[in-house]
Length: 140
Image (cartoon, rainbow, N blue to C red):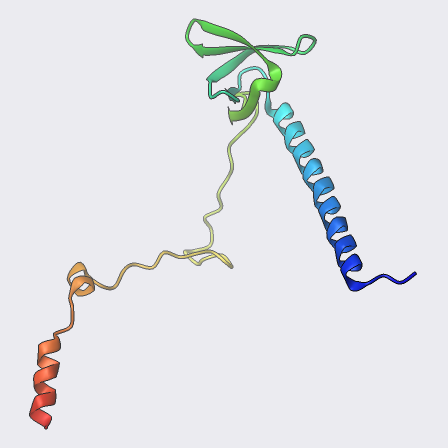
């Protein structure tokens, strides 16, 4: 049984599509697990309908979350409506240290903003074309 090139190409394309489907589902599953690990009491979150609030209480059995949107306003929403953690819980450390001991030298691959060398007058100025034309006429 011989396979023509078109059949082989179709099978390769199908295999690539299946590979990307599995990869995408794994990535989505990892993102959901990361979100669930960040969702805890005290974290400021956003729901899938755009409501911002702070988690006051979580009920794992009923999959419900109590959100305080404004002082004194508490809403009960389903846990799956929490789609993004805006700020982490105050219990979790969020500070990062920055090392400034490189004496002004840029790191490898670091982008450096160069100061502009042209002034506003130079960048908007147009060359004097009439002077060039008169020089050409004088040469003739």
